[in-house]
Length: 209
Image (cartoon, rainbow, N blue to C red; front, side, top):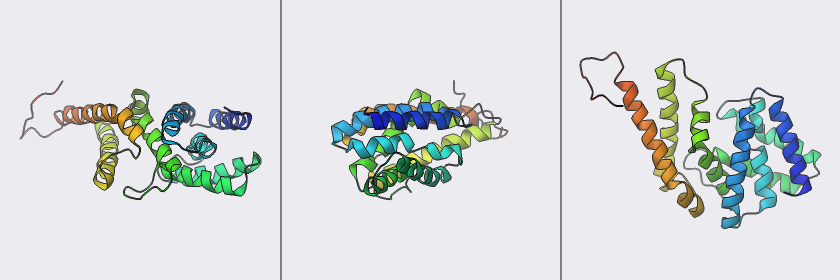
């Protein structure tokens, strides 16, 4: 990691540590590792990809909503990058990549850097830590837990319907295919488990363990 990127990483870590969203720093580091691995194999520009990865969730420190944090990450990212002396062309490219990690399903991503960040972010979400982060905390009700899993499964289903896979790059498909299947199977089994304890006794379901 070059000095400029190391200094950027230090600033991002400080911002997260002083916020209520400390968990996203660990997430960012894991996404960064995936981005490096996938990006090198796919020939991505690391000068664009890595700063975008470090900043992709910085907006959660001011707006932790699923859709709102992306725009906030771009706004904060622009300010931070200017402070580090990035030129306008690089800033524009980096902000575009930041915006790619939660695009509308079916919306095409244009550059390899956009595709790699999208894939790296999703690689982290399907991992063991990512699954815990997705649920967030122990839900107060089974309805909350069920809704969280439905959102995840729905995102995957829409991506698969739009282009045949959750992932864009061949590297991510090879690396994450089995993990994604395992995560989906686990969530679906958990949904079955929840359903057997609902109040509808008219149609009893087989018990799931």
